[in-house]
Amino acid sequence: MVTLRSVIIGAGCYLPERVVTNADLAKMVDTSDEWIVQRTGIRERHIAADGEVTSDLGIKAAQAALANAGVDAQSIDLIVVATSTPDNTFPASAVTVQAGLGITGGAAFDLQAVCSGFVFGLATVDGMLRTGMFKRALLIGAETFSRILDWNDRTTCVLFGDGAGAVVIEAQEQPGTMNDRGILTNHLRSDGRHKNKLYVDGGPSSTQTVGHLRMEGKEVFKHAVSMITDVIKDAFKATGYTARDLDWFVPHQANRRIIDGSVMKLGLDPAKVIITVDKHGNTSAASIPLALCVGIADGRIKKGDLVMFEAMGGGFTWGASLVRM
Image (cartoon, rainbow, N blue to C red; front, side):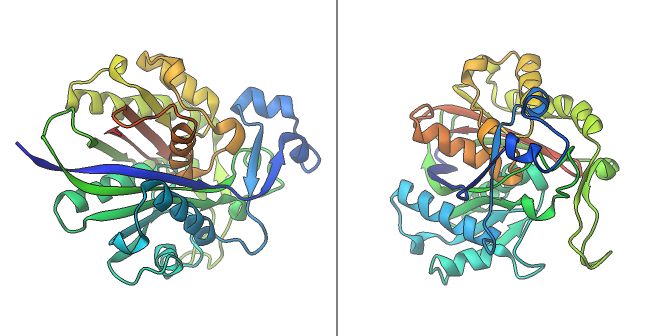
C-alpha cells in the first residue's frame, strides 16, 4: 500500500565564528576546564557576533541544507523555525528567514518547545506533509542562547552555545512499510509541573523584559534519563524495531552524562551515538540538526540508515522521532 512519507533529503548547519573555550570562561567566572568537562563533557562553544541574530544563523543553515539537498529555495512551501530565542516578540523569525531566502509563497512560522523544539518540529512538519497540505519544507533549529544567559552564573553560562541546523523534508510516496524512507514515528510529551526547574525569568506578558535562563541542574538531570528513555521505548514499540536495529542515535546535546546514561539504560551501542556536545555545548533546538549535519558530512550517516532522534527541554518537554534517512 503506497503511502506518503516525510523524507529528509538534505541537511545543513551554521556555527558563529567566535569560539569560547572553557579556559576563556575561567577568566570570567569561578570555574575550570576540568570542572566543566567532568560534569558536562563540554570543552568549547560558539557565540554569535554582535548584531548577529537568530534568523541570520537560520538563513545560513537553510542555505547549506538547500545546497546539500540540491533543490531551489523557491520549491519550499513551508518553513518552521524551532527556537526559544527569536529575533523579535513578533513577527516569527521564520518569516525573516523566508524573506532572506527570497521565498514569497507558502507559510512560515516559529515553534517553541525549547531544547525539544527540533523533535516537536519534525512531528509538526511530518503531519503537514503527509496530509498533502505542503510538499517540501525547511525545518530549522536556530538559537542564540548567549543572549539570555547570566554570564555571572557559573552553573548555567558554561553550558550553552549558539548555532543553527536545518533539514529539507519532502513528501514522497513510499511502499508503506517500516522499511520506508522517511519519518516512521513521533512521540511527544510535556509536563508543565516542572516549569520552575528550567525557565527564563522574563517575558513580554510578565516583566516586559527578556530575563535570564534559570535552572535547577540536579533536578533536570534527575528527570532527564527516565523521560528520554520513555519516549524512545514508545518509538520502538510503535515500529517493532529495537535498539539493536538502530544505525545511529542522535540525541539532544545537553550533557555528556545524560547521553551516556540514556545509552546505557537503553542498551544502545555507544559506537552508534553522534556526539557534538564537546564542540558545540548545548545549542537547544539547534543541537540535533547540528549533530545530524556533522554525522552526514563526515560520512557516518548515510541514505537508508535508521536514526533515532530524542530531546528534552524546559517545560518540561520531551520527545523522540525514528527516521529512516
